[in-house]
Length: 160
Image 1: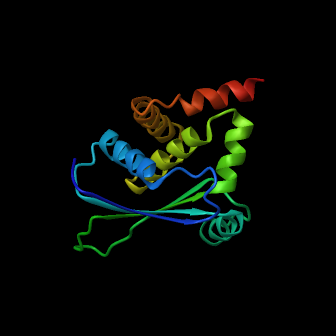
Image 2: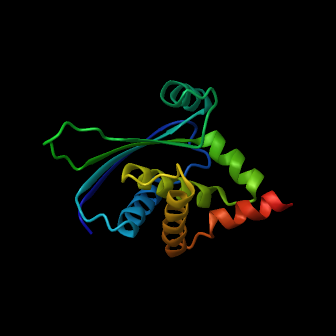
């Protein structure tokens, strides 16, 4: 596995937030699952609802806190860097969604970390084909980590 530099900062209460070593494991698994074989640098920030809402409003035009935001690095042509970008995860949204969806909070953090890394690598879910490709990869990576298919769980909840 190529060198991975991960910077984790927490601007929210630490209660229920996994340790940096867990985030590292999830980032590494996502990069490996996506067959990304270059040295990489990622910044991951855990935020509270106020900061999550402000970032979502500023960068996506949506006035509410969301679970995860990804900011892929945008470098000028010809500039090489291992920096993939930044991921922001909103702790209270993650905890609330996990509770509502009957998921372990740790598993939901794993899913959102993998999801965020894949966005940094250029994956998206703007159309059904791309969404299916991204979800399949997420599910495969998470299975290797011992995390159940997060989309299966959502489908079961929606059918109740």
